[in-house]
Image (cartoon, rainbow, N blue to C red; front, side, top):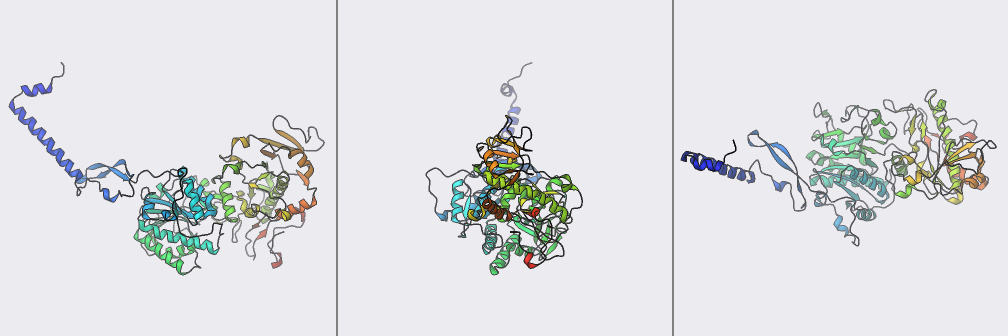
Length: 631
């Protein structure tokens, strides 16, 4: 039977049905009016209080996806979540032909911060022009992770203008600072620290959560979901902790963490306790310019430490007894030691969120080199395609030097010295051919620190032997410094050991490759002027400067020359003046190991020409006159 017409049925029915239908329709109308008025009533539990979320300075706000909340009578109501709208894209450069806006345009205001806020969080760093490449790397990592709610404070007009033209959100800190690298521990360095504290104290009253970072760190994973796991925390800070207190991604155990709280990465919520701490911290530093900002922070938060906030979160009451403090785990919010030396996150099978270039020994150049070794620093394309091409070699280390015997001073220096000799040869050949040397990984048996230790920090996860950062053995900042050519000969450019593994390496460089296999002169096919179709050159051992120049200098079109070994690869310079200049240069390239227990001074100088001294031993200086490098 087919469907009947309902309207026809109604008209054919008795008057009672008209009455019933009428009552139903009237009820529907009145119900709709009631619900509509309830939803749009200013006092209703169902209403959207737009005034709390939308401001005239944020005209592009949009409604995010709905979420459930409890309405009247315990009913779950679906309500849209208000979210500050689409942020202006980073890296979007100003239109062609536009002019630089007036400086006052970049003054830090709540409205400026509000334009970059997302989920009530702003991520910030600051610096001067000397750290431009660090800042661009910092921004690039965040934007690659989808984090664009960020701002950069410029301490000099040159940086401000440079970032503006690159499309990076920037504000003027009014610091009028020098554009050059100030160096750790200098008065200007301490001035930068005070600027950070003033900045925190200025931004917290805006009412937004602040993730404040130094520029010499990079983000490897979006940290905002992790920080949101601890909504009760007033401050979450990184530390210099070098031994694990937890083996997962929980906050570090504050009762076991003995390392200083490191203010290179920390998160502030705009609570009364956090504002009070920031204000007192600022006043402390402004009253005494001899206090290091990090020491001042540690002194304040340690005024009271304990009890725990609860049994689960890992937060602790600190400072005045009301501040809720959490210690970010050193295994994944990594220092220069837990990341580059221990690789703690790898051993614990965790994903790192960040790495901060602390615990290193070569200033700003050393920081860059470490980030380059980890392939997390963004260099321009020309860095990967040096005009003179590159030289590399396969290091050779006997198993006995690497693994046999105890890990002590003697075995450590025997291992490192064996590698230094090969690197010395490679530096000489690079100098002759005017090629950039790609350094090999350097293996160490012992850690390097500022204080006495038994080889590695007790309780740490440092493995022995380990690939140590180049600045553990070499003075990276000296290697990259422009020394006078008249005295030290031509400069020798270097690259990090991971250079050819970097995804930014162009294919045309890696595809232009020549393998140089060392052979015994006079043996079959050991002819220095013949290459085969496989890109292999058989080259005699113990070649001198002239032979290297004659055979390899014409191969300028080949981007990469790789030696099969540096053992006996080079007999020596023919030009004695050139040799003397080279020796003066490379002697300055090696640093110190530190520190021997119970001896003052406890450091031991590496010697680039250790093999020329048959009685050389790894000993600290025995007299004040001995306490100098082997120049």
